[in-house]
Image (cartoon, rainbow, N blue to C red; front, side):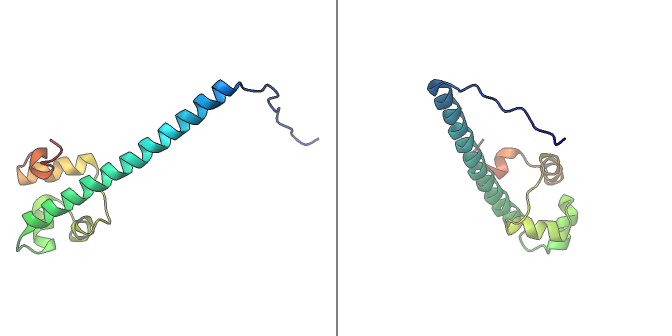
Length: 106
């Protein structure tokens, strides 16, 4: 005998349906907004690292900040995202504050 899941037969009220739709719309807006925030922070970090690297090669600067040269290159190109732990490591090695990288945010 095949398994048949129980199907809810109770209808939800229009008010409940409205609230669910409102919640879903709010959640989707938050996800989109967070994506924009992350992208903005990634761009600011990339600009800061590019400026801080100056004349150093990717390999030289990568060793200085604790990143591989490929990771550093990918961050500058916007193809890689740092974890907060790794960002803290980079900041400690460069002896900088969060406000140095993200002056508009902090």
